[in-house]
Image (tube, rainbow, N blue to C red; front, side, top):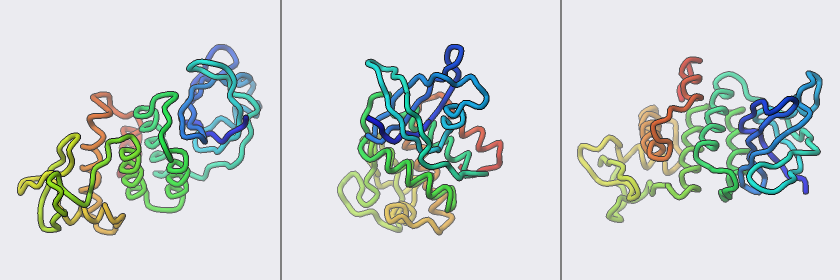
Length: 226
């Protein structure tokens, strides 16, 4: 049965094929072999690009499928910093969501993120995506209450404790006011943006491990603010 899909990553595979990592409409991730990619004018080669909404069918058993009946449903419109940010979003999904895993609401979150990147400021969109992805993966943090169940104090400071949440700490790196602004999806204040960037880095670090993100380096070299 045909379903919507996005290409997260693609690389050559055998003589005339590509190995594509896909995000599917059913909120899962899949690896697929796409044949007929060698010809320069191949419609598959033109279609299998990042950020393009596709409709395709997957056949086969096991971890690696065969992609067939590929059609473009909607092209992408990312450019500049938004394009680099899109590659970062793709790499996060590849690193954190294994093949075959169903992550509730991920496909819709991804679509909303691409649309927001194309039409808005990059930094708030990335922070919103990072926080939402962590929540869907079971690593979300309550930005309203601390580890003792107390409401966050706008004048207080907090530290992030892995698998527990926010601990009140007068020497903590995260101001309560900024954390509450993040919880309310308010990104106008520059201090909130700085706090959110540090907070999301710390939140993602245990899941990403020591291997650096390639897209983050590309973004830095391009002069972005990821």
